Image (tube, rainbow, N blue to C red):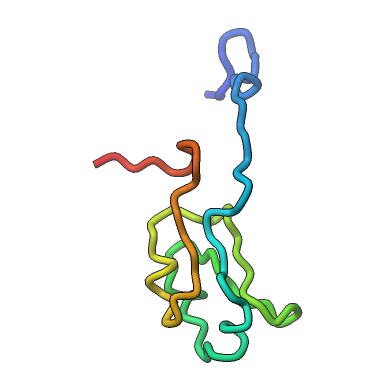
Length: 97
């Protein structure tokens, strides 16, 4: 089974996806991660493993494509140094209750 219709036309060609100006997850101050945070709990607190430590850049790297939008990112940072919000425009994961 494929995602294409009977005429083999790609349905995504009708989708107008406008990227957000800013990412929905951001590290507020990279210096806090470098200077203050010893264990980097954001790298293991998130179930999607969105944040990872880069030895090369000496900074937390954020992979937005791994986000499952559970909202745990800010709670895992002991310095309240992660900004998180739902993606604008209705994009992202949609959970049903």
